[in-house]
Amino acid sequence: MSSLNLVENEYTSVHTRCRYPVYPVAKNDGKQVDKEGGLKFEGKTKVQLIEIMENAVNCAYQLAPELPIYFASDHDDATRYMISNDIKVDSDGTTAITTTSSTDGSKISVRPIGVDRNEEPPHMGNEKYDKKKQASDYYSVFEDLLIIGGSRCVSHGIGSFGSFGASLIEPSSPSSTSYQCRSIHRKFTGGLVKCPNDRSVQNMMIVEGDLLFGDKPGGEGTIHLELSVEE
Image 1 (cartoon, one colour):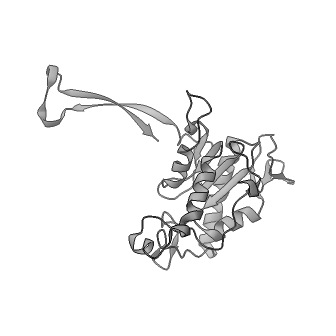
Image 2: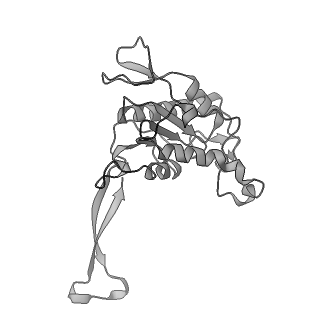
Image 3: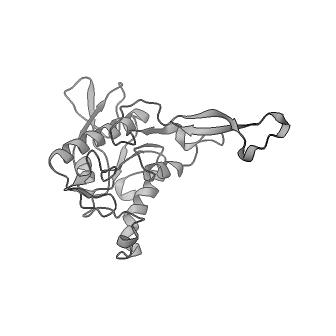
């Protein structure tokens, strides 16, 4: 983190899955590239992924406009593109630390910070693939996870990696949770979601139904549960 000039709790993190879901973008000649890798960051795939990643950065900026933005993904070329280019975001009149000049009055530009790596981060959980790897091959995965966990806010998509990183953030107070500064920028089908949205809001949902095995204690025959539901 020191080499990136990042201070714990003083930056926002973005995580984007480029290789998952396979549709509509992460597909290479019919091959599913989520676990084995091999996604080509070019052509229509590149265009679609840039749109998704720029939206993710915009979501992060809206969470905390004053903070620098750390960007991580599961593709080295995609990350390199994002940390090498200025990204236009919606302006609310506040200037971010990473802001550069812009001629568009409704937009300003930010330059995300990230680690420039020379290969795709490996996917954990592929038994056939994992046997060919050493523990050190996964250092980049844990590096991104810990950096995300040190941020104040997180903008993440689908899958569990970004969500896991967000859960590592230390709450600002005993009564708060890290999820109070979080946005979800993508649907489970792969499409992007504009921000602000309520996809990270956790609501309580009352569930009533018949008890298991026909038991009817008290003659009511129902069970009353309170579940925490993530939209």
